[in-house]
Image (tube, rainbow, N blue to C red):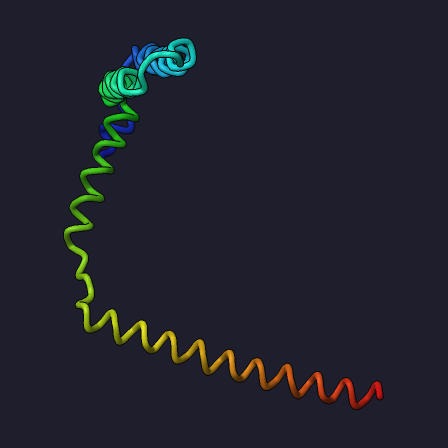
Length: 122
């Protein structure tokens, strides 16, 4: 991550986070106050408030660090080599066979121990 983003914090970051909390609080309170209004309008209003709060939070040092992390994660996901359909099917079949074999072994061990205990108890 970028060390410059982590070390530099604006003097107004606390104020910006306060504004974000106020916007989120206004959305929660407004949604409960206007519960009798159409759901569509309430969802649109909440989306607008979420976008404004997200934009303001991205202006803070932690918001910039989060956005940088998001971009780096997106780049790393592009580097992943995903298995083909055939490889996925083969791996799934191996897992199913191993689960069945282990299940049969545990069933056999349980049956043997149950037989031994019932024979010892009488």
